[in-house]
Image 1 (cartoon, rainbow, N blue to C red):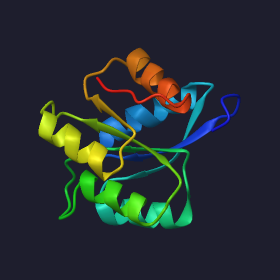
Image 2: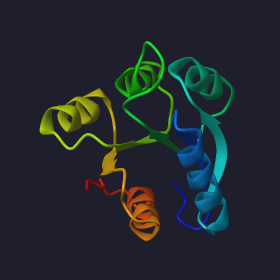
Image 3: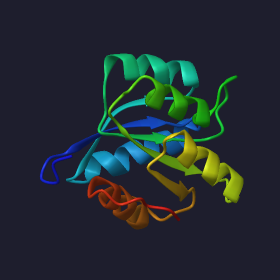
Length: 132
């Protein structure tokens, strides 16, 4: 990823208010732009078929039969070239391990401040593995 360019981000989050806040925050930054949102596995799959974002932010718990880990597996199994950042409430090691094993490149907790959130995205853009 070119550090000087704006990174396109897909947000997969079933809390529409949180997704809207994230979109506004990303679009207000100079480094990132929200290229789309999805609130379910199916919507994420459709978005990823039509758009390859630089980064995909994935919530683990979704209001659909399949969850965020399933989306991560879909991305890796289909060779979609996007960095995956998990954004979740799950603080347990098992969920963290499952997400990283499936192909996530970072794992941050909901409740992270907007400044920390953007810092984690910049670290990911620079090739680091952000974990909160």
